[in-house]
Length: 250
Ligand SMILES: Nc1ncnc2c1ncn2[C@@H]1O[C@H](COP(=O)(O)OP(=O)(O)OP(=O)(O)O)[C@@H](O)[C@H]1O
Image (cartoon, rainbow, N blue to C red):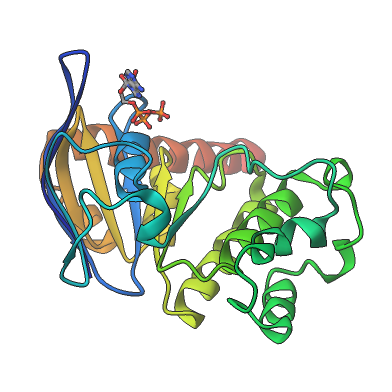
């Protein structure tokens, strides 16, 4: 279990995260959802270890990692822009990290991931020849071969369109369940968060607004922010779709 205890972070005197406490079970998919500037990426970076925590503790399996450097935490992130190496092909990108840590994944395990992510036919392609969804899958494979204890994803679906988005969502779920991999995902899209995760952490202005299962957030929103910001967005989306059908049949 990952535990965040009373985490605080400020930049230049501005409080960005204020007293964040939560736990994430092993193998759980948790989305961090909130408006732009609410502190989502900062929270992800604090967990990863790229950013220092001002006060509070970060505990993983009972061990205090607050002051442990990023490389020793064993967590790994897929960045929003994928950060793939343009001079290497898809396969070389996937196995790149294994050069420094050979044996972390066997050839069979790498093959299994390639098939799970549907990348077999794209392995020889250069990065520029891949679509957004394929790049995303290469970035996930590259991170997964390193067997992170926790997989962190920053807006993994934001650049993808409908059908590809749904297929990557399914793949993320399959991987998390199959490998019992704790997965934490930053998103600003309520639909994405509610359909992808076991639990959703909603933050607003650096504070936890609600942390609960999707069905609980929908049936029992904790406060007016959730009702107005999150549920309203979903309602508007639904109404837009209904009105389209209505126009067609009118
Ligand atoms: N290194 C930094 N120095 C100063 N301020 C920062 C730094 N990183 C983030 N901030 C500020 O912290 C706040 C939260 O930023 P953060 O990137 O965590 O938000 P976010 O919820 O991920 O936003 P978005 O959805 O737009 O990516 C913003 O006001 C941002 O300007």
